[in-house]
Length: 280
Ligand code: PXL
Image (tube, helix red, strand yellow):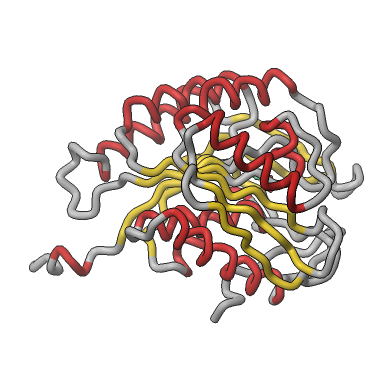
């Protein structure tokens, strides 16, 4: 049996994220985004979230055992890491929902040892429909242990306020938050105003220490869509894995998510889900 030529291998990307059972968000959204953008996707699961239709669609959260998280990361690194001999080396990782201080420590150790060139952090502090302030110890551990390892961060309005310690009411304060989060992390920042800021456009701010760019697209309705944040960060991840610059990755990701929201999927849940096939 012959192997295909080296340059026919797709780029590889890993998401370390939770499963969201209905397929709108989490690892499922990440894998679908990777696939659409031509990247071989790998998911290592940190937790399983099942919405509860009998309790206002609140989250039922079950963490994956720490050893099982470490086992997944070990298998992935051995198969695709720098020392694996794989033709497409895994150097790009996305971090989604971690959910507990223990998982944050496990993942921080793997990241520190992993030699990843690109670490994209979607700093999931709360999910759609959840009340803020549910788990401060988890939020603090994320800021202390994962944020400094990130090379690209994608906070939404609430997360940007929390990470920057600033109130965000307009594009100017969104810019100030993006700059502050860059100073704290050293990472490229894509801070999302989304439907939270008034006006006809969904405005995001990109800042990497040199370039500050406003990314703007007409709002598609005024209601947040499940999976938009996950898919945006996953699209950034896929583009970085293929060799795009952070700014190019941000622009492509914004266009991908806008198309996915325009073609969203309705269900029996009270929120629609982004459709990653939307751009097709
Ligand atoms: O949208 C953020 C998010 C990320 N990851 C998981 C989730 C959610 C929101 O529901 O369940 C696993």
